[in-house]
Length: 215
Image: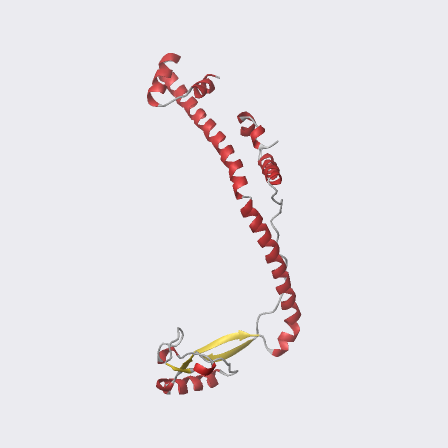
């Protein structure tokens, strides 16, 4: 049964499993796939990068020794005023001033380090890295399909949950009014007409709520 076929009494008794089945029925009727949340795969264990290289801000290549990078850093800082950039391509290529997010002034010229795989270690881990990349790519594709499908099902899920919450809220309010009535009944020494008078003066009570309290 879809949710429209349930009475309010039946909706109040729905379990999480019942709700899940109702949602699936609504999704099936709307032509939306029933997909399970994919689990991320177990990746091959890959050793940490084992070699540190050094470079100078704004320059592409790395040094094996930090002191070599520092020598270049010193030279560049000394000649900073002579540094130029370029603009344009091919025929219109021309000089320009240094205007980089990374190089604003002489103090921006720093020695930076970066961990990498040594050639020896990389030959041992290259296949695992490649296999992990494929596992991640395949997972991302499946996860995207799930996410897109879940988004497409959002409206359907909302309709179901909104109706269930509407009914639960309604009867929670009824139950609260029943508790209030019993409090007034005690104050009124069990005189029901007086208790009803107290309740109706303080709260707006419709006939359905009254019937629930009297039941």
